[in-house]
Image (cartoon, rainbow, N blue to C red; front, top):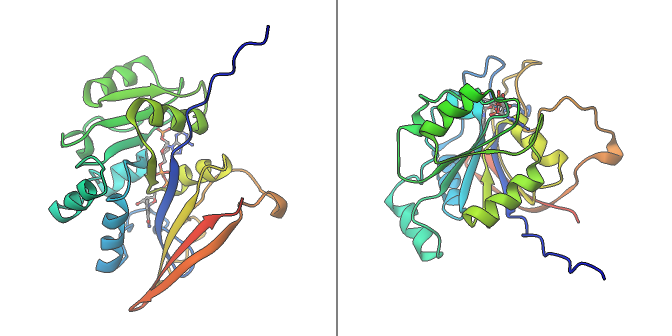
Length: 236
Ligand SMILES: NC(=O)c1ccc[n+]([C@@H]2O[C@H](COP(=O)([O-])OP(=O)(O)OC[C@H]3O[C@@H](n4cnc5c(N)ncnc54)[C@H](OP(=O)(O)O)[C@@H]3O)[C@@H](O)[C@H]2O)c1
């Protein structure tokens, strides 16, 4: 007799939000200058956070920006509650080797759970240290994170229906490669950083062909002063 098929937990809707220069960079080559958008861009970031159950970032972004991935204030928390979301977004940090510093700012503020996604590459010592500061540390693969499984788990265990990824380039690239990005929000800022080694919105090692490129449609664009806000949705 055939086994009854178990229904898989659906994936969350995944948004990526990034600011980039006119030459497509998300930071300078030394990665020190990472915040270069206007007040409108920051407002846009908090508005998007206010629609998401969880905000996710790569370990390097969390450390360099010292971000705590907060809501942005009471105005945005009220908006969340109106939308039927929890008052504070969950916070997800991706750290495949468990290199994220347990003394990072994000672990010092306890307004919402912090979840770490990692792999079997993280040593026992690192896992133990991270488990002491995070609300959950999830091993999602032996060498590489299986993002499809990780995102299903986030939805099943933590109720994440809308997940906002805020970079950096390495993390975004893994999500693009896995075909998991539903919507891309880009702010184009009127600056040029140059620099061959400056990160872009999707920095991976693989050499994709045109036929394997992720394809998006332009859903909307808006100019605010000298910046352009673009929303792209995945072509199905
Ligand atoms: N302009 C913007 O909107 C914007 C937004 C975000 C960030 N940034 C800038 O971008 C730069 C950081 O980007 P980045 O690409 O260098 O780093 P990142 O993606 O933020 O972080 C890289 C680290 O995160 C973990 N990670 C990322 N993807 C992973 C994967 N697929 N599997 C396992 N672990 C993964 C790894 O941690 P382990 O080392 O522990 O394995 C890796 O070393 C910073 O300068 C930041 O300020 C700019």
